[in-house]
Image (cartoon, rainbow, N blue to C red):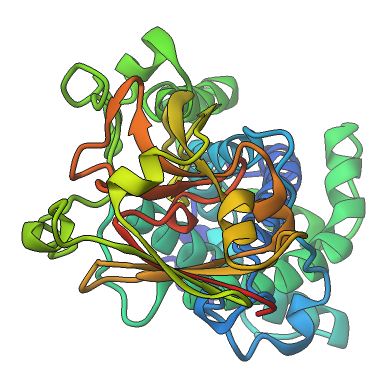
Amino acid sequence: MHDPRLPSSPGFWRSPLRGPHFTAVLGIVLLVGITVLFVTGLLSYAAYNPNLSPVNDMTPDKGILGFYLFSWPTNPHWLYRLNQGVHVTLGIALVPVLLAKLWSVVPRLFTLPPARSLAHALERLSLLLLVGGALFQFTTGVLNVQLDYIFPGSFYTLHFYGAWVFFAAFVAHAALKLPTALRNLRGLRAARAEDNDLVAPSPAEPTVSRRGAFGLVGGASLLLFATSAGRSFDGPLRQTALLVPRGGPEPGSGPGGFQINKTAAYAAIDTRETAGDTWRLVVTGRAGVVRLSREELLRLPLHSAALPIACVEGWSTSDQWWRGVRLRDLAALAGYDDPADVLVESLQQRGAFRRAALRANQVADPRSLLALDVNGEPLTLDHGYPARIIVPAAPGVLNTKWVARMTFGDL
């Protein structure tokens, strides 16, 4: 137990940087940051309106964990863009802080005996869940941002349940350690030995000062922020988003020169199905079934709206000018004077969210369109030609492309 060659011995850990103050500062930063991540993550989940229809619900067994869900609003139109930009960018920027925090407390993972009291046992259990949950959440989140779906199962399910387990452990650990952290931040030193168990009994010669270590962690966070935040902003900042997909310059030029999540080729769109002589929009509701060609849709009253597209991975476009038929006008064609819920189905042959449901409040918004044009030109095939959904403040996957059928009614 006291052999300095074993990690269970205090003599094994010799860095002079470790100590209550260093750990407390990192802990307070994470306390604030992770709370924001948790709240924005819950809001992101609510934005999918999972209680509306099974096709929107990626976690059907959530039970009481969905107690807070509400109808996602359409105002302001940039709401989801802001929420998800904060969630993903902050998560990436906190990675160096998390790693430094784990490094600062790693001796406690090897402490023997495993539990000296009931309170100590609870703290160790919360620490185990906290470390495991943090690594799981941050790893799956970063992989999702990078579009590397190498983990088993659905990201939505894994990240949702993982968030609740992790945050429960986080709250328990914070409640146990916050008084000590605040004492250490004020420069006070507790008399109990366990409050100072991170201090090396025989520290090695320092290679960097504690202030320098804080600077290194903060600099790494700022670097990650600078190279990822731009994908959520317009203008020159987008050029700095070099480390994330769909960052950097806009893809191409012209009316359709803005970011795309999935291409027509990826979605296995058959161009014969989108041709003018074959494609028809099927609208179903109280009034029966109405079939409309693109030319017939263009003869209906058309309206314009400036709206962004924002995705769960944190990237977004600037406001694009969309032109098309209001969803509430299509609801009226289907026999609903008061807009109703709608189930939208795509020509897409594979991948998630081939179908998506929208709430009546989203259908009712005058900016919610079945878009036919963007930025003054017809939609390109990759942007959803011959018609796509665009709704203010909705996650990108609910803005269905290559629309084939719309079914209005209570869902």
